[in-house]
Length: 230
Image 1 (cartoon, rainbow, N blue to C red):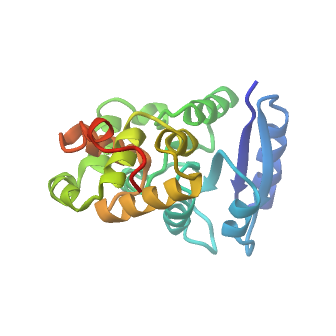
Image 2: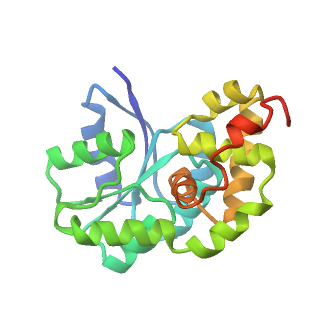
């Protein structure tokens, strides 16, 4: 059984302790750390290899959206779930655009709460039940493809190695798998992914995959470029 490693960010001590206690009772979930006011989230993420970050949208003394941006920039593989009472559609759009994978209403049932965490861990995008359907599609499509015209034009600036990495990311390969296929280090792969995101003005690996599906410029890179070229 795979264990979902969770970092919980909540500045209400009652909620922080309560949510942590609930999660710790799940056999497939492990709370690595809990973060309240004044604690360094970046240092926590550096110290603990989290799969999921559970983040309160309405932190009093910190900007939750900024935390999302920094987390996705420095730890792109970490999945983020935002918790809120009643998130506005504008907030949902903004957070999804910055790479958030799911939302949990603070009045959600236990079943919904755990299901959201497990679904996001498995790669799904999850919104509260009353916001799914056409709104879900609109938000995700807009968030991922809003920069589509300029993104496709930027593809010519990619190196051959970066195009290889893009194609493998789109195929769902992890950094370790990419490193093995291209005979380079995992650190080098992470560096390539970081450069690709910056060049394409994207935030997540999902957006890279979307870019590949919109463009034909990478289709033959793995076959035509030598895998030993760095």
